[in-house]
Image 1 (cartoon, rainbow, N blue to C red):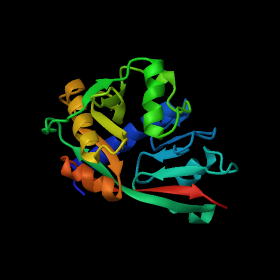
Image 2: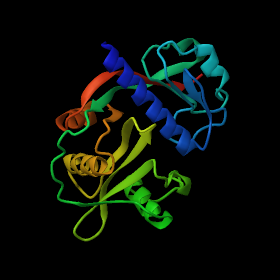
Image 3: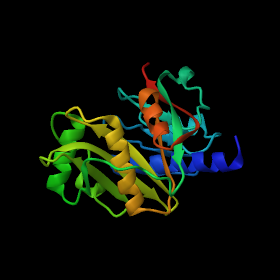
Length: 233
């Protein structure tokens, strides 16, 4: 791994940690990891490592391993949490897209979510059923953009979240489609919207499987592996 790749991987991990902290409403951001002593919302880890040599003992001390569902995002696939009662839930790849990469043209109308009511509609489309309040109003900031792709009928049929870290990188996550909209529409539209908002910043995130293949088609390259560990014992 080159020094530039390692630096971008660390930036991607920190960006993701900041997003997890925002959704979770707090936690402790240290030099080697973000941790939350309080159990985090569904789909979100209780810790995200920020360096390859993050302390296993320190991470476990900072999270609630007594509650069901506790998880750790091992950003460098460097930890062995099996002795502490964890199992690997899934593996993925950090991804990076250089600033200025052309994004193509979407057939949907893409806008930024601006208010609480629109956020609830966005989340219901993302969830496929209803808004649960996972994405709370405090997330509607200058640094976080909920992006909505609408059909000709005005329905949200695609979307994504973008968040900026220190004016250095933009993270993309929660890319989704609904009502049979092709995945490529979501990526094309979201990346075009992100480029319009932050034209000079590279885009980072993580994906696996078919979603990783789709991201690669849209100009991303893999930076390195990550693992998410789930506490089961």
